[in-house]
Image (cartoon, rainbow, N blue to C red):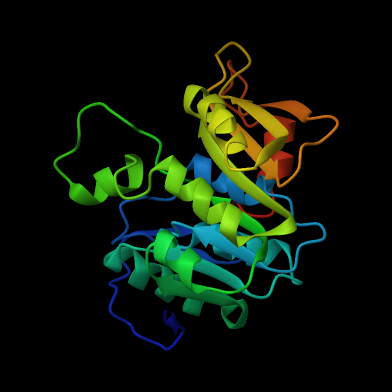
Length: 249
């Protein structure tokens, strides 16, 4: 296992997504910056947590967002199996204002979980979710969208091994896959404690679930709804704007 933070400028800065305090290069990664990742990075709980793990780091977006939000988070470690994504995340970490707290590991989460002997207060992941359907001609896209290299059972098994007893595990998933994930998580001793149902507009159906898990069942699951935009004007709702205001330009 190698934590790599040395300068290695191998990525051409062709496709860059700029935020208020940092920029994310995304030329090499199959998972581009999108609403799902930004929602998850802004929503994840950071109170009372001192260490974080980003599973399937991709461009490193979630890790960098956590670093901006919580100065007490150290270390923040991203784990990424895809080589091109790993180097891109490494570059993004090095270029961020919080490089001293960010580390990237080029490894599968299954191997990482078997090798480390410490736990994390927060584990975050924007995991692949397609379990069937037609595969893309791009193997990179298949790896980040379909549960080929990271079945949900492997993800949950790794999280259970790596999460501190009072830690939190946070994901974003499409609605149906999210409810299935909640049921599966209980088999691994991970229990839903908070859920936000995300709708693109008030008139449309729920499209995403932001879910937080704990290692023990809670007395009451905190439920809420987040509507992203006004259906008539297309403008951000106040709730959505407040959630992401520290990041979007």
